[in-house]
Image 1 (cartoon, one colour):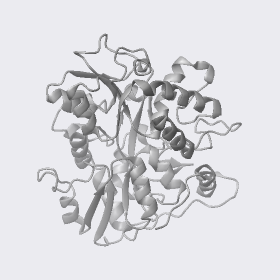
Image 2: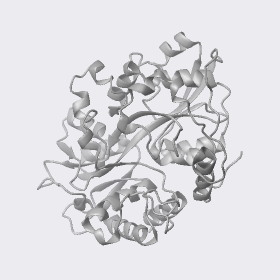
Image 3: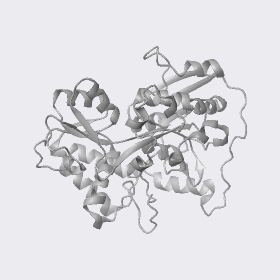
Length: 391
C-alpha cells in the first residue's frame, strides 16, 4: 500500500502549475490524446452514490447498461461517502480506479498528487454543452489546463423546522448563536471543508478580516474561522455526513435547524416533515463535481467515452433528478421528467450562483490571488477540524 503525504500539497501544486505551462520553468504543457481508439473492454468508476447507477439499486434507474452495450466497456462501480474517503481510496489504490467523480474539496488534491490527468475536452463532445459558469474554475482547471468535465452542482443551504423555529432564519448567524433557543439542536456538516462556512459568515460580520475567498485564509483569517466554530460547538446536536442521518434527526426533532442539501429538504417535505430551506443573505458554500481520469489508467478510450456519456444531456438530467442537484449540461433541463426540476435547483439562474462558493481544496498558494502571504493548506484544515470536533 502506497501513500503520498498531504502536508506538501501547496508546494506540490505550485510545481504542478509550473509544469502546466504557467510557471517560469519553461516546461511545456502536458501532452494530451488527440484521438480515441477502440474501447479496452473495461472501466472502474469511483463515484458518489447515485452518480453511476447500473440498475442494481433500482432496476428502473440504469444509465450504465446502455453505455456498456454501446461501447463494450464493462463498468465496475464503487461508491464513496465523503470527499476524504474518495481521496484516500485513490491515494492508497492508485491504479484501481479509472474514473472518479470528485467534488472541489478533493479535485485539487488529486491533481496535486498526480493521481489524475489533463483532459482534451475536444474529445468529449458534451463539454460544449456544459454551462460556461462551470468551466475553467479553480477546482477543475489549473493554469488553463482542464482536469475533468463538470457534472452538476448544488448549494449548501440552511434548513429549519417551520413548526418549531420562529421567526424563519434569514442569516447563517442563526447557526452561530450560542444563546439561541435552539442551541443543542443544530445540525452541521461533518468535514474540514465546513470551516469555509464559518469564513462565509465572517466575510459579512468581520469585514476587517479582509476575507475575499472562504477557501483562501491566512493565519489571522483562519484563526477567526476556527474560533467561531469552537464557539458554535456546544450548540451542535449533530454532525452529519450521511444525509439519511440528517433526515432522521429532523424527522424526530432531535435537530431543528442546520446546514443541508436541497435533496434532503425534498425528501423531508415529501414525507410530511415541515421544513423549509433558503440560501442565507451572506451567500453559501456549495459543490460542483467533476469527472476526472486516473493518470495511470489503462482504459483511456473507455474513460473518455464514459465522460461524454455521463455528462451528455440525456444522462446528466437523469442523474440530476435521481440525486437531487442542478445538471451541468445546459441542454438537460428540457429533458427533465419533472418540468420544475431545474427551477427547484436553480440550474439556469446565474444570479443564484453568484454568491455560492463551490468547495475548493485550500492550498498554501492563496486562491484569492494574494502573493504576499501564505494561506492555510488543506492539511491544516484537517488538523483544525479534528481539534474542533474533539474539543
